[in-house]
Image 1 (cartoon, rainbow, N blue to C red):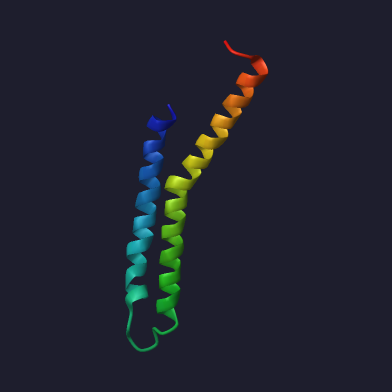
Image 2: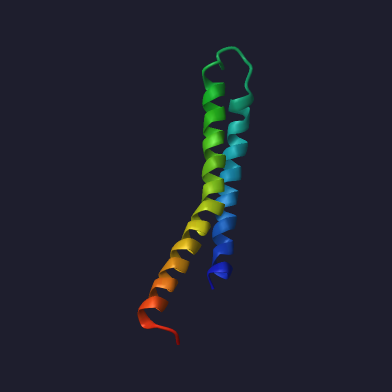
Length: 82
């Protein structure tokens, strides 16, 4: 059930991150006069977006799976084998 309902969530997260990423590309790659302060900021924001995307897509589900597995094991030890 979680696998099926999680697909639209993943698509929304990916689309939002990609939209922000593509909007910030001109800022990060700017070489015009006066962009010396904005280009590093754009690169830092893009890095943060990508780190957040990876954490959201891989870290959170992995942590959830560990917590659910540990909780299920604890319930089994309390109630005994079925």
